[in-house]
Amino acid sequence: MLRLNKPKTATLIFSSGKMVCTGAKSESEVYKAVNSIIKLLKAHGIEIKNKPIIEIQNVVASANLKAGVDLERAAFLLEGAMYEPEQFPGLIYRMRDPKVVLLIFSSGKVVCTGAKKEEQVKEAIEKIYNKLKELDVLIER
Image (cartoon, rainbow, N blue to C red; front, side, top):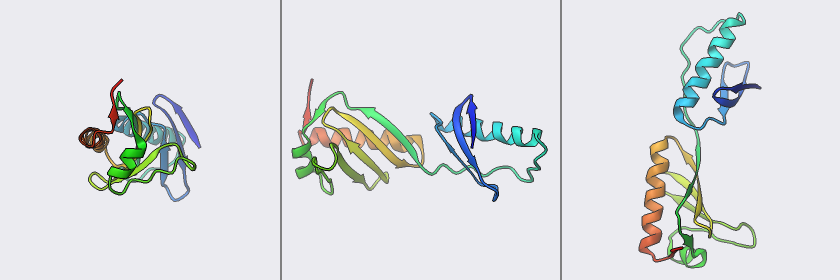
């Protein structure tokens, strides 16, 4: 495992040449981290034949809806939502477009996972906010 301080990331490097980089705060930080690692490897005599192919697999982001959410009602009205408070305190919603999973908490905090691009996160949060508002399950503070 290789840790960088700038950008603050941790990267697993495999003998196959594949790498898994985690911890970047943006897509641009991923590219900076990978390029820094390539430079480091080259500086240590490791031959890099081709330009790396960087493929973002999973963007995880958090958001705040700035309103509470009635999870019981949301689970009943939101098609495909899963809410089992005895198992997990958040509502799990699998959005089809963009294809992401949202964890929605009664505090209005949301965790979005599965996006491939930052824009998909923004789109998903806007969509879920509008949908929850339309279903009248947001509790204004």
